[in-house]
Image (cartoon, rainbow, N blue to C red; front, top):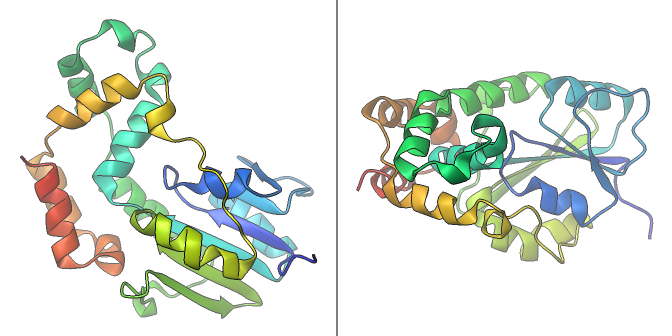
Length: 226
């Protein structure tokens, strides 16, 4: 079957299930720009890679996925735990929680990343509307197709939305529950409490307000405040 797009660009900030799309298709992660991109599905966090692809190809499906920030940042921390703390298995969870709090994991990073995403794709963020009720937003711009959805709606999107774009998900990849750090990760989630500063940043986040209702934001903060 002929693919409906010249390329699929999974352009997101990480820890949002993007590897599942890449590994279920003919895909590859590209950290830096290349002269030519051999794969149909291109996964990247790099704005430079995204800009390069959008300059080289037309009829690209651009997929962007967002995630509630504390869940995303805790997942990101543990994905990189060997870099942050090579001997993490010997450390207690209080030490690791303090280490997490000392690092720059914040909604500010993902907000800045998303602002750059809108700039790179030439989408006017002030006019962007996410369809929370239908769980995704799609539109065409500059001969490309854009698809936005939320990590929290993955099951619905996998079954009802991605197949419309000829993307079929059979298996999930890179899940935290299968990682070598899963037990410590689970303990960390049991004790972590969001700081007042981070709570304020989340509540003030313009990106959060684009993709989530006020009730969803409140529930997210309450989950990590108890």
